[in-house]
Image (cartoon, rainbow, N blue to C red; front, side):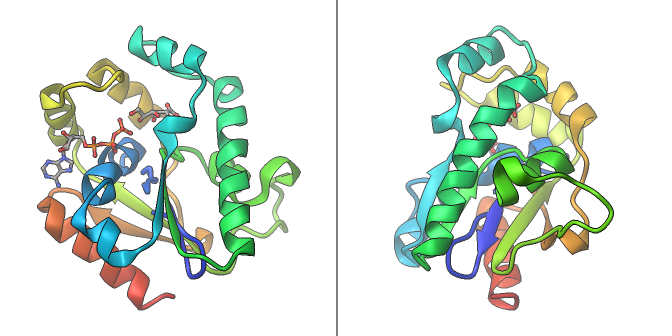
Length: 197
Ligand SMILES: Nc1ncnc2c1ncn2[C@@H]1O[C@H](COP(=O)(O)OP(=O)(O)OP(=O)(O)O)[C@@H](O)[C@H]1O
Ligand SMILES: O=C(O)[C@H](O)[C@@H](O)[C@H](O)[C@H](O)CO
């Protein structure tokens, strides 16, 4: 989901979102592009997989096919905020993969507990970018149904699309179409970042 000049990250996907367009897409696809990949090693950017930071209760809930609520997500988003803050402070490059479905979630990733959205609050942080991975529901559903060894049920995809509030330009977001191949999507994200960072 979020990316930055010194730290960073694409969602979920979207994200996120790193970042998914249906936000689900954003999140949905990120790890494929980077996790344990050649690109991760080549880029040398630390990658944080948002799924690793969910509580056991949240994972069990998703495995039962129940969507998370805002209350479930807040502690998780605050943890990821802490990571982004730490990376910014250390002036490192990093990628955080997560489904930042709502604008308020993205604000929480950037500003933590202090995020109080109002018309005059800042919407972006210099050097932090959100890659919004988007694609058709059916395509993402097919990919999720074919995926093995993951706790998240494809049945949750509809709730992710329902919850999605696509990011806007003022959030330092850019869109990436996940209908392309994994290497093409990775290349699109890198190209988008290279002209921004
Ligand atoms: N562009 C693509 N082309 C073909 N298959 C893809 C593409 N992107 C992702 N996939 C496949 O779709 C499935 C879901 O992708 P992935 O696991 O990366 O989603 P995710 O964003 O990590 O989802 P989650 O947030 O649920 O972990 C995987 O099996 C992955 O290999
Ligand atoms: O906010 C959420 O509903 C969750 O973060 C999900 O998006 C999952 O973490 C992920 O997508 C599962 O793979």
